[in-house]
Amino acid sequence: MKTKDIDMTSGSLWDKILKFALPLAASSILQQMFNSADVAIVGRFAGSQALAAVGSNGSIINLLINIFVGLSIGTNVVIARFIGKGDTKRISAAVHTSLVVAALSGLFVSIIGLIITRPVLLMMATPDDVIDLSTTYLRIYFLGMPLIMLYNFSASILRSKGDTKRPLVCLTISGVMNVILNLIFVIGFKMSVAGVAIATVISQLVSASLLIILLAREEGALQLSFKKLRIDKQILREIARIGIPSGLQGMVFSASNVVIQSSMNSLGSTVIAASSAALNFEIFAYYMLNSFEHAAVTFTGQNYGAGKYDRCNAVAYRCLLLGGIFTGALCALFIAFGNSFIRIYTTDEAVIPLALQRVRLVLSFQVVNMALEVFSGCMRGLGHSLVPAIVSMAGICGVRLVWVATVFKASPTFPTLIAVYPLSWIVTAVLIIIAYFIIRKKVYANAEEAAV
Image (tube, one colour):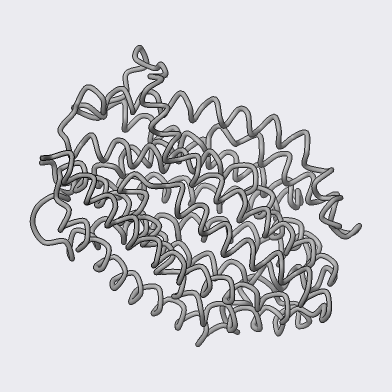
């Protein structure tokens, strides 16, 4: 086995989970740092309105791309299972099917995004002093969607065999370029949010191209051959069966966040800017815990494919413990030095105290998400993606929508609004844990019956 691969079906799990999860976390956090550079540069050199325009668009972007990012999770699970079974023919078919789906879905999201950007911003009650800048940023950003999809699916393909290091290298190269271009376009050419968006698209082109080159040079079943690019309908159905529920879950999450962002918008551009600055640290923490979810998905998928069910159980508990430790430590760091970190993004003294409010409240409960993410990932690795999607949508989205319609309506303040995040995590984590043990028992029983 090549050193860049991880043998997930034998040997110690502790070190292998860390070897998988930490480079993945570093990739995601690094990507967010580069995205945060967009926010920091416009916040310092183009003003609070530009900061609000760039920082408040995440919910809209995620609303449109999550269904297809969910499909990339399906790619990860399906290929990991084929690797566990040693089925090289179907590994190759899954690789080429996934890349075709990536290109087509990216093109689709680009077209839809360009059409609906301004109507959605108007629907969200985006302030007049922000809406034109937000529209410009989003329309340029959506032009890069095919590149984002190719990167996500290519990274999922490599992740399925345990390779999380090379995507990190590719992301580092493109991210450094993104920061340099941000500085040139925003400070040098005074292009404000348009410059940030153009820099982002160029960096996405670099990261996607590098991963495609790596896959083309790959040895064995994961190698990309442009002559083999076609859709295998059976494999597409399996990817969709696992990926679409995950994507729908992400879409509904984003829809609920659009509702929250709309409520945030009603509180004014200062609150929007504060929330946008604080959100960066929540995303850092989320990416740390999410890397252990991806470890749970991939390790469970390979071991389930290999018929090693006791090892699947061990994956769940080790991912939960290790993820909790690393996520908790990161959140504690952000809370302890919150004032200094917030000043990276803004020097507006009206914005900073509000941003600190969000950092302290939300990050104190972020580790609760660990159980939600890991046990959801384990269920997906076992081939059950619909159950965690339904439970999460009912728990997180249901709680958030009810809260906004009732509690926030009665007391429309910033602290009241952001309190919905920890509350929704706690409720959903309890439901997900119960669902995991029910699904695990059912899956193992069915597997034992099939083996008799």
